Every structure is written in C-alpha cells, then in structure tokens.
Image (cartoon, rainbow, N blue to C red; front, top):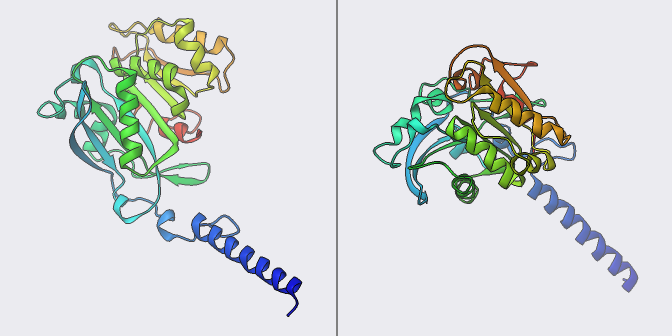
Length: 280
C-alpha cells in the first residue's frame, strides 16, 4: 500500500475515533437529545432535606441540604438555590438549626410543598437547595463559601446558581449580588432594608444580574421605600434585563410567604420558573 494512502487511512481512523469519543463524552445524539437516560429523569417525588453540621465559615456551622429525590440515581448536574434566613433564625448551626425550617423555602420543603420539578424553556429542572444558618449577620463571604462548598461537594450546574433571602437574608442577597455577581444567574431579595448607593447597585447593573425583589407596602420593620430606591437606582444604569419588583399593599414584614409560594405567579411564572429563565 502506498504511503500516501496509509496516511489518509490513519487520518480517517483518528478522525472517526475523535468524533466517537466526543459523542460519548457529551452524552448527546447528533440532534441534541440525550444518550444517557438518567439525564432525562423527571422528578416526581419531593426533595429530600437533611441537616448538615459543617463549618462552612466561622459564622456558619450548619445548613439544610435539599436534594432531588433521585439525586443518587443520576449523573446530571442541578441548578442551585442558596436560601438566606432572617435574623430570627440565627443560631449555632447544630441544636439551633431547626429554626431555619420556620419560613419560606426550607419550610416548604420540610412540609412536602416544594415542587419536585419545574419547567422552563421547554426543559425540566429540579433544584438543589442549601439553607445555611449563621450565628451573626450573614455576610457575602458566608454565601460565597456556601456556593464553593456546593460546587466542590455536589453536582451543581454552575451556570444556574441563584440566591434569595428574606429580611436579613434579603439584605445579604443584595450585597452578594453587588460583590460576587459573576457567580450568580439571578437573585431574589425579599423585604430587604439596605440603603441603595452607587457602590451596591451599579455593580449589579454592570453584571446584568436579573433581579426580582418583593416587599409589602405596610412593612413596619423594613420600609418599602428601601426596595423602591434599590430598583430605581439599579435600573438607572440600564441593565439588561431591568430589575423588577412586586409590592403588595398588606402583609406586614412577611413578604416571603407569598414570594416563595410556588402557586404565586406573574406573567405565568413563579419565582423559581423566573430564575430558570436565566443562566450564565
């Protein structure tokens, strides 16, 4: 056989092997559909929430970890929600940890009221949810450490990381977005009381971080004007998309029950479906 023909055959074989490996590694057919059935699993059972005692930071010695029911039966990577509690749920991360189950997302999961599956863009998603407990005021660094832990220990889709929190946690959600916005796909602060400034709003707009924030107009603890000012100032820097807010006339300080209720929808989407529109 002529050397030129041998070289041609070798090149063809190498190309075929490369294409075969590429298809195998991607787990996709040429039409984009999955070749790994576990990737297409749609969860039907509630997520499983477990207490974890672990020193995430000096300020956080424990958290609740909620995983899709069939997490251990798949190889897929899941979107991540970091939920930040309010000041009334602070504690030592061990014996105090059940306080975190009092409100919002951890409460919904605990009571089997958090949907196992969400649809966005014609695709199905199930969340990993981590709800850390802090001993003192939550810092952006606590959230950063929690995300780094999640990415190292769990199968997280790093293009779909979301942060939300209520009251104290809402404050930290704003602060985290301003400081570490490159890490998140969207944020949802609830009844926060931060004062809007250029330094904590312009970075959010510059990173084009999607924001949906919630507040009650009769909130006696966190003035609704704080949220109005935040959204106005963020939007003054022309982000894409524009920050949005939902204001309810009554409800006092508790805007989180409605905000995190899967049945509450605007434009046909609850806050979780809204989050899933966005990815890095």
